[in-house]
Length: 275
Image (cartoon, rainbow, N blue to C red):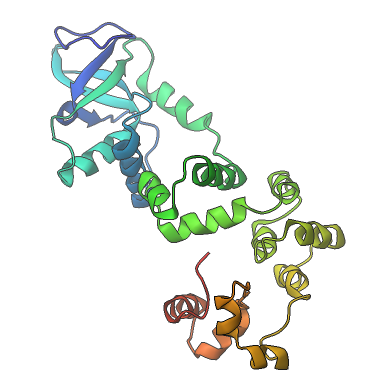
């Protein structure tokens, strides 16, 4: 369908191009809770990287006499409008940036806005973990590139990539409700799929994450072992050996008041690697 220029009031279903500064928030929008800033940031990042993938649905604004004002009220897609406005505020696009929209002149604006929000089903986190992993493997995107394209931090991307790399059996169990997110994170302490499956077969549905983490690392040599002291952790790592850091023990050594402070300090000082 080709976009048609704005002339008189467009017909229902018409796809037109409207300057961004002529798009307004609709007072009939059923969503009264504002979008979170993080959501708008993510939408702006997506639009910057890929454009507006789904045209907003708009209603023609009319004056007191019923004549079109030349502006349009966004019935569906207010988040996209705010993402575009954020890009304009940052001067990454013009205030008059053309936005492809679809006109709805027949349906009740409040009802279709409600329908859009009520019938929407959020993506399961497992789907997102695997989708990020595919971007990394198939497109060659690093954490920073993925982060820029989706408006999240590189640290969050690394976490999701790590979780997406867990054995497919465990991902399926998480998707089906048989494994919690905390448990999945505990399995992700090691990339050994065979060990993950062994521990998974041994645990019950209520096994705490710390017990899974301990089982995942029980075959490892502790840093206090005299063999480790003889070889040296740094020398072992430089030779290509894998080193698993126990976050709980690391945090205890840092003498900070909160876990968040401990993690931040541990990453900065190199005691643990961000995932």
